[in-house]
Image (cartoon, rainbow, N blue to C red; front, side, top):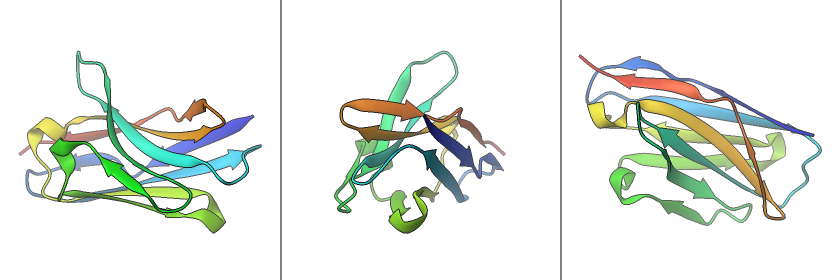
Length: 115
């Protein structure tokens, strides 16, 4: 069993910053990818960013230059530093871990960008 727990969401003004954290625990052993998706109100879940166990990263175009994903492999943690936030970044952000073709999900954390 693999558990993922996100934290760090909240309300922030446009132009502000937030850092999301994701803790992975349970029966998952490196190497595995970790990343983030988000789901805006009344929309589907969409890819945001991912990082492989070897630090290869990928971002959706919407967040390039504003968001940075990082990991602490020793702690099985992933982070998403979000800068220059826009109202359209408002969503529930979900962390995932991918191992052997199986994707494990957290419960999500709400990010609201509003003045």
